[in-house]
Image 1 (cartoon, rainbow, N blue to C red):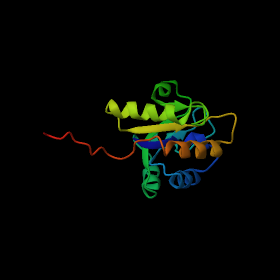
Image 2 (cartoon, rainbow, N blue to C red):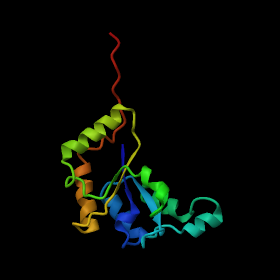
Image 3 (cartoon, rainbow, N blue to C red):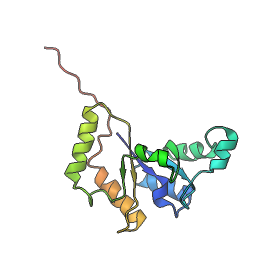
Length: 154
């Protein structure tokens, strides 16, 4: 599984600051937000609609830092709610680390190896502090390496 974050979680920062911070935390991908119902705007939705595709600068900006754009998101879009896997509390403060470790193991057992994106909208702490705490806790729970186990033919 690959750790990813929603850029909206650091909506008060510029896109460059968000990406630099995410790289320092060991994040591999980002869900980039447009305004929608939020003040966070890390890509220009009008540019995407006009170009009938993806904003050109965003993937380059991310790939220059070794990050992948997981997807583009219009914050507050009701159709997006089912796509968010985890949200609203700093990891480790809503459930203990062992609970999250089990989620990751069970996901791997079912064959899932994709993105695990985290949005932090924790009213109890600063957004940057919440993401740093979450990133630290996730390092011990996400199964990021490719599987190399093979059954032995006896």
